Amino acid sequence: MAQTHDHEIVSIYPFTEAEVDLLANNSNECVLMWATKDGWPVGVTHAFVWHDGKIWLTFAEHRHRAAAIRRDPRVSVNVSSGGYPKGASESLPTGAITFKGRGEFFDDRETKEWFYRALSKKLNPTSKEGEEFFYNLLDSPLRTVLAVTPEKMIMYNGGKAGQHMAGTISEDELGERLSGDKERMNAERAKRGLPPR
Image 1 (cartoon, rainbow, N blue to C red):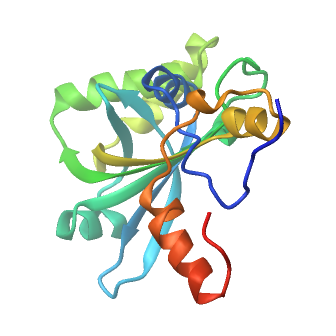
Image 2: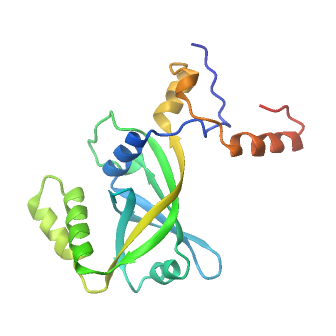
């Protein structure tokens, strides 16, 4: 198959629902992003759990991000295959997803207990001692739990892009070109005197 890859068109590389679950369940890190009171975008790396279609993470209530997200719950969370633990299976999907969504805080004991346990197990899958140590570290009085419910996903499936560049994927396996790679890209090309794509 001839190579048809165009490096300016990337929205055609989505993940399947199953691949989203694999990426989010196996990556140990995400970047939580929010806006400060004066409009600056800020991001911090967190360990997280993917559960019931939400991203769950935790931090101390006195952090600036707690006040900022309570003021405006619109956040983004980036999860990438770069967060896979050392020795992760090579069959896992590669690439990244930015989840745009809204954050909700939980401070009840039941939520904290299941989340602390789930996160501790995820980060210490082969060490009960490590799991218990991390659980006890998390279980502090100032800590709150944030759940982010995605409303939109911005996806880049690196495996699919690699296959496309190599000419080993059929066109019907690619995703639909989204508006950024149709209207917006061609409007920018027109401004520069370039033909549409």
